[in-house]
Length: 161
Image (tube, rainbow, N blue to C red):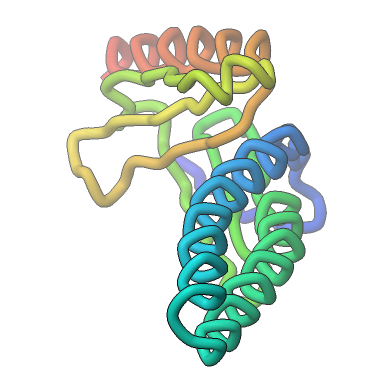
């Protein structure tokens, strides 16, 4: 059996949907708004010093919007003949390779916000929890097709063992 080593630049990388950033930003904003309301009311009624944590939470929300955009744009995957490769991160790069023969099953999940935005996550399960992976924020038709392809490839690879 030969193992092909690929240069990361020559792999056919596919990115996740930018709507994943929207979903994550809505979640971050919803949780921050609760804290901003609490701190704002307390700052008006209890102490003016509570405007300091209010400002910190507001600045963290602005920073998280930028960070979420950078984080989502760094998630990509490549379907190779023998494996699925998932890449994440810009500074701390994570590269996960999942051989189709080790794949047990693939799940597709989509919460209410993700369904509204037309995206889903595909989670790949293997015999070892450490060797699995997840692809968040795929367009719904793409997620369904990927799950079907992975399931078929996993079954075909296991049958050939």
